[in-house]
Length: 162
Image (cartoon, one colour):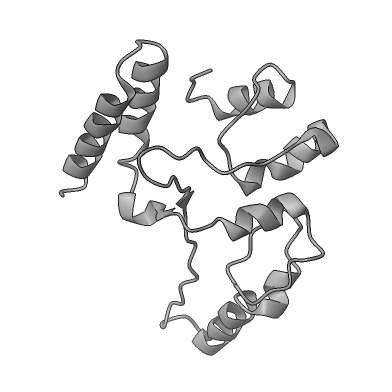
């Protein structure tokens, strides 16, 4: 199933109408609720190079002109501490690498161990359109996968000024 409708494809996966999805840890709670122990995770398939996920990075910004910038800095430091991230729900992947994840969901631990991905921030939004078109071209139009990937990369790089 190729669709930009996130709710549709996650619903189709949860209901068993599609066998797999490429998704992220934000979807785990819903998938665990509907699929339970039948839910599994796996590495992205390797082609001519190792595949890796896109990873987004969220930052905390402090406005130095606020009435109490030190309080904002203190809050940001706490929110990024091991103590705070250890309290995240079990489907979140913490930023810290020094956390004990052994007691968490083994699927999340597996995902955390494979997070050597590509910064989504560096690609901006110029990844999604070319690669969505590439997947459709390969799966629906039966285009050559290697050529379609090369074309999508060239388009993405061109859009990113590379």
